[in-house]
Length: 365
Image (tube, rainbow, N blue to C red; front, side, top):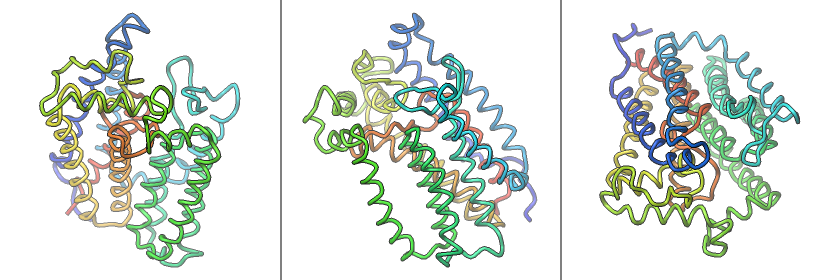
């Protein structure tokens, strides 16, 4: 085993901190109007974001300082707790309904989202499972099917809330880990076809999801209904041009883009900072993903490598889906932009996970 580095990878740490700083600025800019209108305080959202950022940075400091191999012994208990929370949140009177989904546990506006915990719990458990020396994932029945059944069970519980976006991120990161572990391509392709059929069934089973697909294909077919978010998002991005309208000068945040500080914060960023600002943010994410994958390829043990792959893919899948939705390339799913969007559970858990990735970077060759 390599000796611990003196410090984590600086080129991994810099984009994390810069993206977090940009996120704080944009949460204030995008949410100031809504905060003043609904709560009489234009700083309402950024103050809460600052609190969760402080909690997340503290957690990131500790996870970056703890030997990543310690987490291996907590993989199974953590997953069991996550499954328990997913069951508890479905109980009427305990789970809190927000945005049409029973996804929260908490009191008033403070709460946690168990599905966010499941993303990291699943990554940790799979890294431990796939990293065993005696495990062979190339076989279908004994190798590939057991982890897929586990992932499918977690996805089903998340869909009962329902929360397709978070479930998709968990599923995407988990499947990338399984692919990295050496699953056979013919098995994955067959399961992919079955997965597409299942996804089509989920869409057809819920009218609001079907409306999102229709809005994605032709938002102008219902410009005041299902197509409203995408149209208003594009109205924000278009006028931004090359250099943007200027920080704080967005027009679409004045009750046009719904919840501009969360899922569609990138459209406000593009409106205010323009193409240059949007590309700069995407560039920072690319650096983070590149350095994270470099760490994954340089670790001396399979557990560490799979853990790094899972964390990096969790970030990458969220970025791809969020940006794809904002620019109209994907249907609306309700996914936040990591480190940028407003959100307590997502920000704190993301910083905690990135702290583990920073610790992993200390052991890379």
